[in-house]
Image (tube, rainbow, N blue to C red; front, side):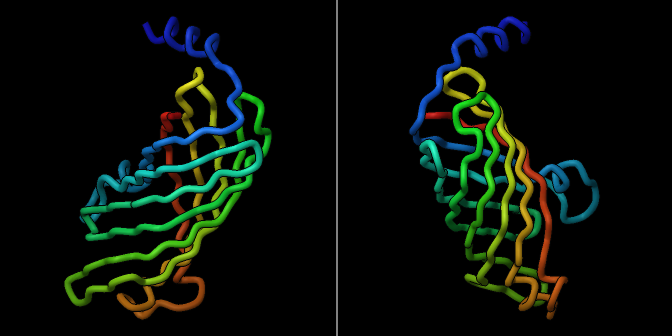
Amino acid sequence: MVLPLFTYAQSTYEYNPAYFAISSEVDVANVLQTGEGNGYDGTIKVSYRNEGFQMGLFVESFPNRDFLSYGAEIDKVINKTGRINYLVGVAISLINRTTERHTVYNAPSIAGNAQIGYNIGSKFYIFTRYEYRRRGDLKFLYDASGSDLWVSSGFIGISFKI
């Protein structure tokens, strides 16, 4: 059943140089790890892509840790006309987070991103994304500094092209 759908999706792919998309992605480590505080960590993104770049607005929610982040990103699109695309970019965001001892509002965050994606047909795009983020909330919540403020994450997601 899946093979015919995948084959059909590949045969219907046509290159579109510019489009809007709605994406959903999850942090793989937080979904797979067990233990207190882990669970669903998801991001919803609305973006615009053309031949050279992608820019978007996003919201990331991690309810088990009372974590909410919202921001904007811009990425350089590499290999823009093929089925497989590579993106590198930066994101800026604000983080709201609550722990047993503290609440932090609008802590600044900056991240570097690298993404590999595959166009399935003309409407869908699946991807994996690596993020290395400086998290301002960690300074306020745990008095972290230096390299302790930097966190890496891996996401998998799907985009629907509008």
